[in-house]
Length: 158
Image (cartoon, rainbow, N blue to C red; front, side, top):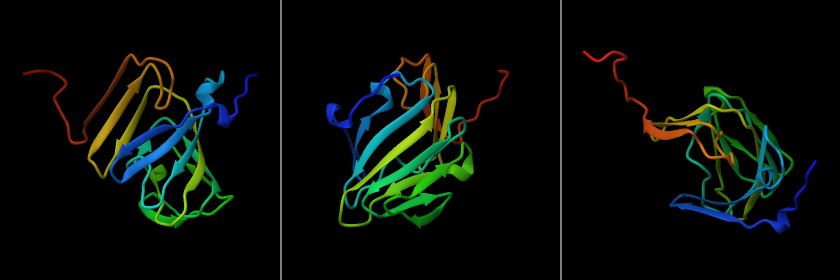
């Protein structure tokens, strides 16, 4: 068993315009292998990762402070302190956290850590492929990439 304290970890900042947040990778600071967990802070007017879903990894979210909304399976739903949201590893697990309020939203995001994984981003029309280490994993990946969702080639060259 290993443990960590969030006070001992530095924030990692992500800033891509509307998608801006802070993250502390709690599970990666321990010897966890099959379970991921990160602490997030999302300022007012910001969003987390682009709307997406995983094909191999189930995710969960638990609200620690603040109250705003989550986009789940294409619908906006309110979030408040104490809420837990489960996001299955399929299209019905599509999600994005949005802070449309006036206070910082703090939440824990947990996930299984399966690889390979394909993550679908329907609104930006991309998908990501990860092998060797799952999304959020600490190990080097043997393959990863992002591709247009409508990319299609024939199996056999003519």
